[in-house]
Picture 1 (cartoon, rainbow, N blue to C red):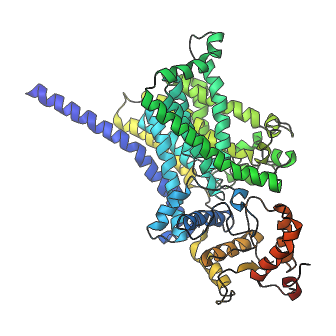
Picture 2 (picture 1 turned 90 degrees about the vertical axis):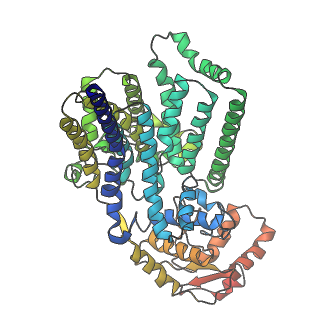
Picture 3 (picture 1 turned 180 degrees about the vertical axis):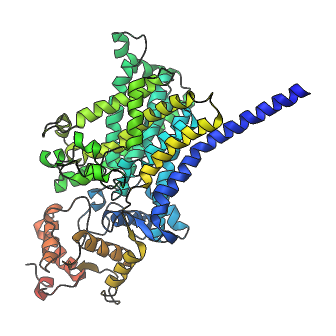
Length: 572
């Protein structure tokens, strides 16, 4: 009886420790979400993440998706700003991969701004869940899982992009990398289909991050060959073709059909996503010259810049001579830096060593490939490829590289925690929570960028008061630019008001602009914009006058002092 009681006691104790360890993973997330994200909303969620520019532009695009699925806006890609130019959603990220989450939140009755805040929070949850799931599958210690997932989800390089919230949804990155490695270890078509699925979804979340994810995978594929044990050169060359053949024969008929359908559907979906971008690149000439791109390639100095960190901004300020500095905030934080150095110095031997060094090797190769050294970079070879030269901010590749860095740090933490398991529990948990706490504190001491929700709504109310209440339903708004306001803020004010009223507008703001587009500082910009549209769509000359008069008849100018009534009767 005594032996039985002792055995039950040990079993309960073991289960309790196991449950507590697993709870650690989500405890780290809850602490991070509160300290880094929700705390920045202020009381009663009064502050909206981002700024009055790109932050509200993302809110406009998400709301446009919601209106589109409700049937209020007839077309998705032809959003009613920069009117009458087509495919304007493809001037920037489209957010199609995460917009359904926003739409569901709107359907629950949340306001536009509150749904946007909730969409922002949900992105952190999905990123953490994806990273935590993958790290758990590698059997890392719960503290290692929490610390790796926390860096991927709340790390300083991500927070530095707070004005570009379209980049925050990144859960496809760890899942795609995991599927690639799973396919190598246990080839099946279902795993290959899952890999393709997550790649395409990441493209739908962000074109930028989808492209950088492809770069990471392309580096991982050949690099994995060098980490295969006891394999000859010829076997390395034939490895991947052999894996594909093996995957086909190890998959039953039903799984083959499902996998092929998934991959075909994903391929068609990717083409459908990229086609509007190809069209606008061709029609509007959206390319970036090398001078523009090279200014946003990472430099060695970039990895020491964290201007918005309360801990490191004084040191960061001493890093000088970096153009486009806001895009070079790549310092990963001191905790991650120490973990990287510990891993490099001690070179632990364990079952996950190959996995960790594979991912770190991919990081080093991509950093070397994209590094800008006095205007020279290997990335120039990639920039020469048509279509890729439209990618401007290459520094954002760090948001993808945060995953392999997170995995390496999780491995180092796992090795540290393994060596403390035989010590008293208080020592074990103290070390784990100390590392996790310091990591979260670094991110919590980041200066958030936000704006008061009430101020944003007040701006729109003031603009709506200037608009006549008896406008015809087919009206087109054109609001004069107020030089007392930042241009992007004023233009987004008009976009949001026209969206609320269900009207198109000549005003607009995005990552790109139609050729020849100018701020509406004078009324002459109105007929000029309509005429420039002719060239953009190669409208036949015989159709131009009729289109011009029909369009001008609908345009309602507001705030202009120099409009010539004859422009509405004859094409100047």
